[in-house]
Amino acid sequence: MKSKASAPGKVILFGEHFVVYGVKAILCAINKRITVTAEKIPMDKILIRTNIGKLELPINKPIVDIDSPLKPFYYLANTIIKKYKQKTGIEVFVESEIPSGVGLGSSSACCVAGAAAISRLFEETSKEEILDLAIKAERTIFPNTSGADCTVCTFGGLMEYDKENGFSQIKSNPNFHLVIANSNIKHSTDTVVSNVKKFKDKNEEKFFDMCKKESELINNVLTLLKENKLKELGKNMDHNQEFLENIGVSNKELRKMINIAKKTSFGAKITGAGGGGCIIALTDESNLEKTLSQIRWKNYDCFSVKIDFKGLDTF
Ligand code: PMV
Image 1 (cartoon, rainbow, N blue to C red):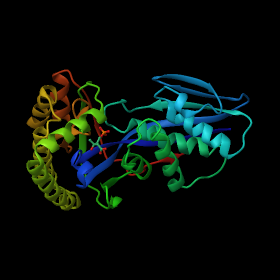
Image 2: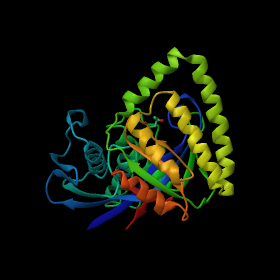
Image 3: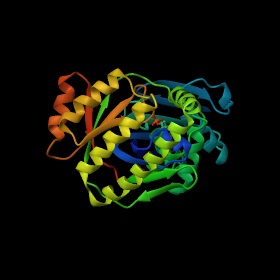
Image 4: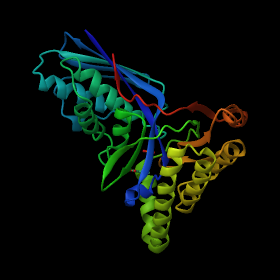
């Protein structure tokens, strides 16, 4: 018997970095997915096959001894084998529409779809239980993850998140297309976050003033999302980008991409940690194609997405 599940990637629309210091962030799931197929196999092994490589290990290997980006899948399969006292192994096959390592939530989507596909080999599992397991799996590679990414990949839609109150879904259905352009510069979220901390330590007053302004911007954005005011949302994206420039997470390449995207879209900014990764530009039917072709004309990888309202899906 095979069990299959898929989960969407995500973007941070507003509030990255400032969220680390208590400001609200707004995330949304995107209609690009990871699909995981799991199957019991008559061997005491865990086999993982993906487009970024393979992993084949005996069951019950200590997780700390595994050095592979596919470790979360091993963790999931091994945990479930132990939970159900299985004598045999599991094979996992992963298909992805989401580029990895550029802040689009591919690892969270892997953990959520992986947790669902593997646990449903044994019994029906609630979204809440799958989320809990997915966050534990993601912590095997990103120990400090807040869990916000896995949460939005599980439930889909738009979500606000802050450190103190956790996440809550935003009941808006804005009608936008996002253009995502990939700088193809790999970035380490940890390094960029620690550089921001250095900036904050040197510029306490300026930084907390920006946090206050970012908080005001986010509150304004929450209203604009409900009213589907795309032009104004775009202006807020530009404004949010100025804050990200000020704290040093942008660079020449990202600025160049943002300036191209801004010519035709409603607004554009970095999404995620910065230093590399992706930018997003806000559009609707009137300027989507123009924005895509402007960015492609300059030879950047780009594609468009909409909000995914489904979240985790199982087959
Ligand atoms: O690039 P991503 O999607 O991993 O986003 C990082 C978001 C930060 O705010 C920069 C860090 C964090 O832990 O919230």
